[in-house]
Image (cartoon, rainbow, N blue to C red; front, top):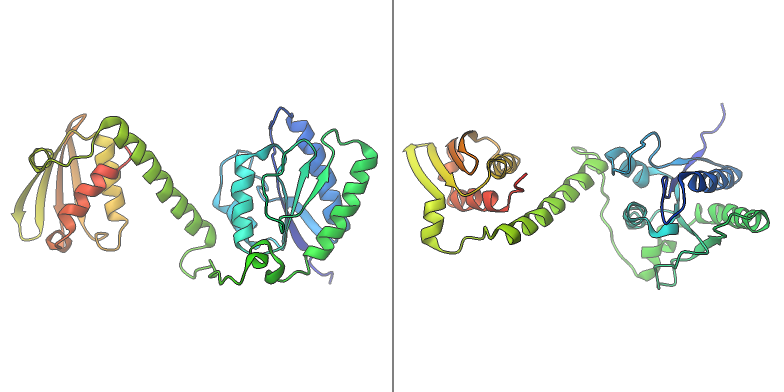
Length: 283
């Protein structure tokens, strides 16, 4: 039985970038794949079969699990840097490459890179291939102490795997939370929806308790989508996931919400619900 080859993931631009067509990056990919195979690896893009530029959880899983990763920062593609940052945090073997027309974005010494000519002329590309093969063979044997982060100091980075959620889901959840917060800040700034006046707040959120475990909330001046997204966020929390919430939109910015459950009697529930509506994305 033949031994399974280690996997070399490749992170790089895959479509037009920095004025260079898709065909250029395909040529670079072919050369990198040959070098990886010459070093004894099975090579493929971390994006694998995905054709879009979106960050999928399967891509993140590949970035985390691949035995070694080659990252081409040529053209300074944002997705490439995002994926490189995730890979560096794992302290697993990573080889950075770039073309001679891209300014190197790091000043830190341990971030050594291997250069190649943007015009892909043969003599220098052959020298690049040989150097890349050597770097792959050497890097695959490195310990975490020899990684980029390891060379900066003794850090203890917790393992990301979880029995309940795969690493890709965890990363995407945190990115989604961050994205929602950023969009929310921008939306609130443009629409001036930060309510500091208690009288205005009372007019915006009108609470009526209709039972031991049931309240009604009339919400004014917030888009229907903001209310819907706020309810979705509330139900995702451990404290309020058992609540039963129904909503009726009376107009584009006037909603009637009925909430049932033990958690409505929690001291912070009212403030948490109102804060969730204020911070929700309005689309």
